[in-house]
Length: 546
Image 1: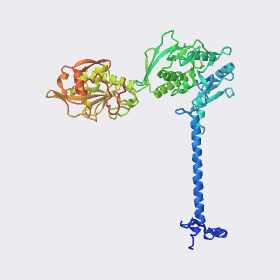
Image 2 (image 1 turned 30 degrees about the horizontal axis):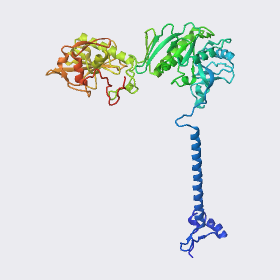
Image 3 (image 1 turned 180 degrees about the vertical axis):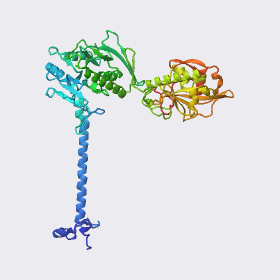
């Protein structure tokens, strides 16, 4: 009988003197498997047998693990319905929590405010939120239901402790400003909650005014993010249902509604709250319930009041920047601007593919930019008229005048055509041939580097501009020597300019081709005035209904 293979074939890493010695002692070095008559005789070594058994055991283990996973999966499916989402936090219980956000570190009455409310209800949950640890320190009641939550995270702490919603376990929340004095003999918060429950379906919030020096005012509020604008309007005198409030009040709403806002704790708190809620169509009902103040005014020194006013302006500026609001129209008609000016760059960067970046945000030209374009256009046209330079509204600018009597709401420059032969009549255009010129009003006149035309910029810092395109007549057509890759940049019959006619544009009268509809349809296509479209529909199409 031939010698069976040595165990060293299977355990080559084991030293030779120990490879099979223990198997020889047991007489198991060679094992022969005898099959039924007519079958081949097969010899299996002990090592091969061990390998077969190990593989079989592993397969068995894998099988049972697979069965266990299937059982766990079925058990999870039994508990979770298809399409449902697991809650991030436990269900909210009935009742309300006081949330204090609006106060100043350097002087406040927060400890007293908290104590007065706890005298009404010692178990009332109170959450005080601040961007950073208040200094000087506030001495608050040392009870589990009073929490201070810092909003700016620390790298050595878990994230959830910086989220106020983690501590808000009640169904309702009352936003309480600094200085409020709760009446110990009257459960005002409970009355507010009852009023809120009776208002369901009528208002998403209720408010109780404070007895402050300035009475609470009910306002309507229209926010257009597309136009970067918030417009406040006075509500009827007897109105109790408002879109916004001017003045100090305690506001009560559902906790989930509050923390589902995109920036629930942005300051100024009520300004931020009502901008966000007006975009959702929510209203606030003013109640007959009112609260007293611990001190009037809350800040006792003119210096602290000055500091608070400056911080309030900074917070308001940052809020409007974060929300993309560049124009605020107040209820008295005054306008506040939070966008670009002559001293700052324009609100958008370099244009690519004739599509400014704000169109991709589903917004139109910021109103501060439109204001600068109107101002520049009026100034340039006045200079041209005084200099005897014949001009006309061109391209998209003429289209805006025909459609809106203004700049197209999503346009980013103004285009004027001029007669080439009239350029020497204007000293600023003549001098621009040799380099940029800043005139006495701060406008910048220059020869454009992109082509054979002129550009007037709003300022050295702000490059919103008016482009002046020189044409000359040739064989009855207005033409020029260089052309841009724009569909409207084509030759046209000179008879459109004889005569030029006035047309309302951007708040004044400007000159335009005499048959401007035919002129525009020659350049853009039939029905262009009635069919608004973005400059490059291949990159960004206008939404239906815009």
